[in-house]
Amino acid sequence: MWEERVNWIANYFRTVILGPLSPKLVIIEFPGLWVDAAKSQASAGSGASFKLAYLCGALARDTAERSRAEVMLVSPGDWKGQLKKAVVDERIRRALKRDVDYPDHVSDAVGIGLAMQGVL
Image (cartoon, rainbow, N blue to C red; front, side, top):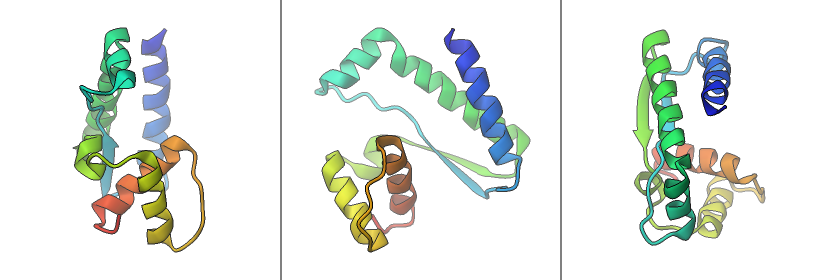
């Protein structure tokens, strides 16, 4: 059941936020709906994007309530605009000055971090 999955993820996230990292800023990518993208439309149609939005809200709430970290919700368009994955990955390699390939979600996280620092 997806509610159990949300609770598991939120509990794990709390251990990171309240644990040894103690970040000052937590950036959460909030799902965006890309009108022309078939994958985005399928996600909306199946309810997956709404479940993801629910998870993002739970993580943002928990962070705000249980830590001193500032929470920033960003949409994909906020940090990468209309850039394709290959372009973002190349910019990450250039910004980090090394030839590295991250798995999809890791690449997004690194990209968001670099974009928020103004170096993507």
